[in-house]
Image (tube, rainbow, N blue to C red; front, top):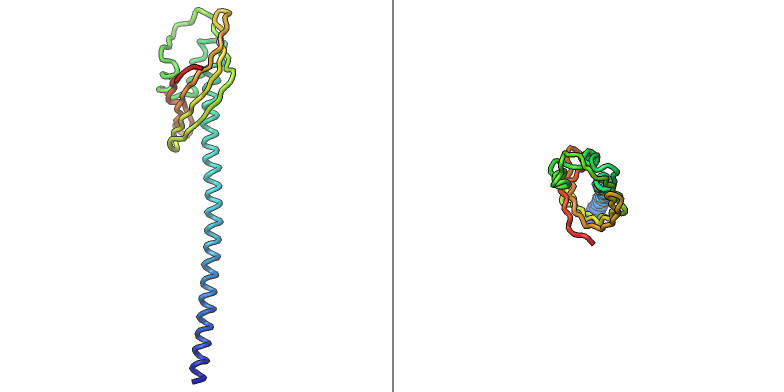
Length: 168
């Protein structure tokens, strides 16, 4: 009887040791997976930030090309680099290839942009734009609320839609 109790105690002790070892190995795996998950989450945040910064930068460059000019006829080519064909048509709905007879200059005074990602390749911006325009030596200032839709084509952010929502 003592022998049976001894064997039962030894088996129970071996079982406890095996369970403890197995539980420790599982904890170690869980810790490793949690660390790996944390690294992937951080990497995802960094990539999202880079993506957002890329579209915001191109949005700003678009407005600089659109509203910072000293020759109105040369601005079409400057803006075309930042738009899709559709976006270019929205930016200049009544453009003409005729040379302009009046002297027009424009200066982007300030730009405040708010963005909302739609998906991985589309981001919507609401922009508060302050611009000074001089035509035939008369200067005026305007504040406009402009919505732009950025679209990623061939790994490049381009303006696909431009809408003036109001002025303030």
